[in-house]
Image 1 (cartoon, helix red, strand yellow):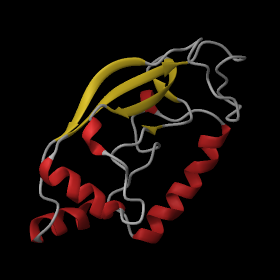
Image 2 (image 1 turned 90 degrees about the horizontal axis):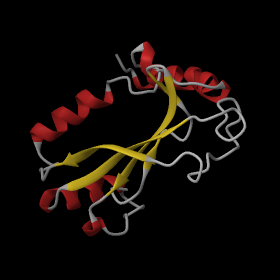
Image 3 (image 1 turned 135 degrees about the vertical axis):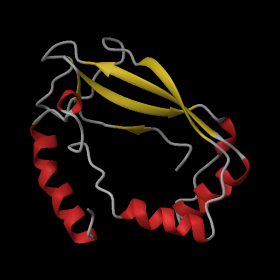
Image 4 (image 1 turned 180 degrees about the vertical axis):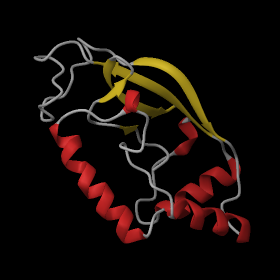
Amino acid sequence: YLSENFSTVLPVKNGDYAMKLRIRPLSPQLGEPNKADITADVRKVLKSTPAEYAVELQFYTDADLTPIENASIEWPESESPWVRVGTLTLPVQDLEGAEYEKFAATVEKMKFDPWNAIEEHQPLGNIMRARKHAYYVSQKERGAA
């Protein structure tokens, strides 16, 4: 899935602001993803090609156009355009072998969710508050630290 956008979909804090985050691929050579085996797809691509992404923010403007509590309303780019704030590069790397397997096992034990953030970057809205419990249960089931 290296060739697809990643986003928060729902708003989060950015200091005193509310915004959505999007990481958009810039590398045209990433091609169509192998949805049958995501891990194999990532291994294959990163073995020979770096993956570069634009890091973009879309800011809250008002309760009608960019609501926090109504997740069914898509924020219009015409009213709140995406602003590029940086670039993320995944370098060429070998994602196989004992060293990688050890690293992957460590990552699997980590807690990764939007609530594992400083207060200035915490999720916003009722849907995100509801998801907090699901993240906790998932982490507990995986034995995450």
